[in-house]
Length: 153
Image (cartoon, rainbow, N blue to C red; front, top):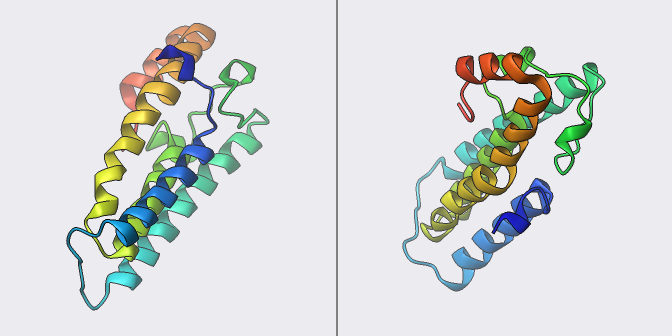
């Protein structure tokens, strides 16, 4: 299973999960969720998620380091400011929140069955390998950062 580590770009996983959520809601609806403000809530959550992800990318750009998730070893600096004071993975958290908004928008329980799979996949095949690389590159600085800031929120 380690062959999948740092191989599939997280945005590809995000798109695949979003498509599977849509297919599940349309082809295998289990329990429709209808409430008046559902679409507004969905849009709000997705916009917040997109904003968090953009803040993460901007922090990397300001630090002049790579945002390439497949090659964390090419990072030139450990980014710990801005949104990174609240979460170690704002880009992934943003993706998760947009999937949350998407699940609410779809209005069925089926998409929620895939939501934990996105978290599990990223934790195992993206975040854990990234953290190993960062620990090797930045040593005690990364360990202190990891002890202060949670992985997701």
